[in-house]
Length: 101
Image (cartoon, rainbow, N blue to C red; front, side, top):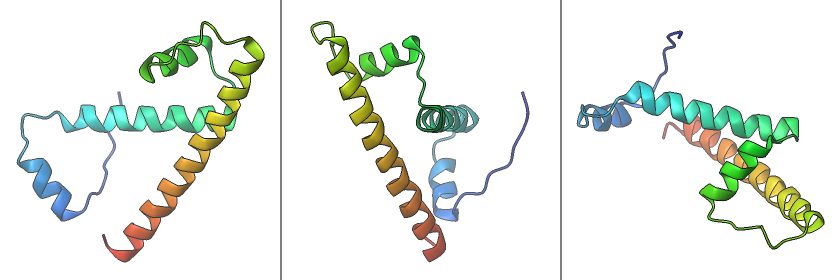
């Protein structure tokens, strides 16, 4: 495992300090892992069946009664929506960072 250093706004740091019971390294690792997985989904356009099954389980979706063509359509639509959501979140984050928020 490697170490990295991240910068956070002072108000966030103050809030984090109030929760010393939390393993912030673990929180950051999970957030970074999830984010990289989303990037790979968007960029790679290939999802393993295990990842797809996990995503569907996490979303409480039962697609056992949907034919394959319909499932692919739903997947493509949700992938595009998630890509758009990630773009919006990145833009907001950049704007907030530039505004000093």
